Length: 382
Image (cartoon, rainbow, N blue to C red; front, side, top):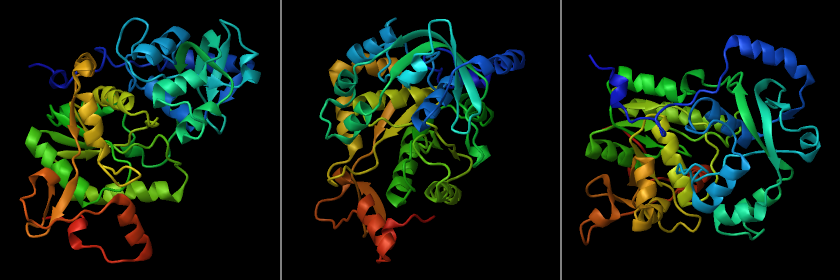
């Protein structure tokens, strides 16, 4: 009888990378680390490290060297030609970089000082962050918030052999922090073959609930609600409220077709590059489809999913789509049709039928101010 896990989509590059060392090597590194310079990682670095160690960034085997970094910025591929759209780098202060030479070791620690990994240094270099900003955000304007954040970073980039001792410690919701390998095994045990991922960033309200169910039925697939938490402050009350909102809505899905897990991805906000990147990550987690969008732009205009999907489908991006190998599902502009008591994509609403929509911003305002919300906008079980 064939192994059912072989029926799932293969990891990007063929195999899941695992950079965690065995106990003997870990004990040796812990003894030696007293002599190593060290750096405490920030939230973005911790998220990147976790996905490097657990295989979420397969086929990457560490933070990028200068050749890979330049190639990704210029051509969206690694130096060996493998498609990869997002630079994954480790920036360290100049004061730490001055203590390092090729062959020396650098301990990577969490903010509490717990050692998570060690890099054996191969390369140190000073990046041109203006060039990086232009590549990622199509802008080098310091007034752009993401550009400003990047330009404010100081220090050098470091690369080298990465050895993991531990994934970042997570004391909250332990059953929801599943690695790519753990999720794949779970899918295999349940006999799932096609899985649609929805990378939630906010509590799900009815339009998202309706569309995820609609997508699962249309594609005869199962659902993974995969909230992105890499940039969330895990010790903040809002974080616990957010995760409990996801837990509260899960009984409204069928437990035989839908599951919940948390994704330690730190968003970059870099448009189409990010869509391709998220697709690669979801493939490594065993997903065959990814819903794109589902939130309004700041001006409450068109849905990002439609805009990005149209760009994604351009003929110039065919090779990139084929490389990523998963199907994108764009989140359309959904409106509530009261006479049918259901949400429909705007283009499917019969002519002359009254419809209404409620943006995320307006929903939050109404909730905050205690204003009435039409029952059609609230998630409920039929």
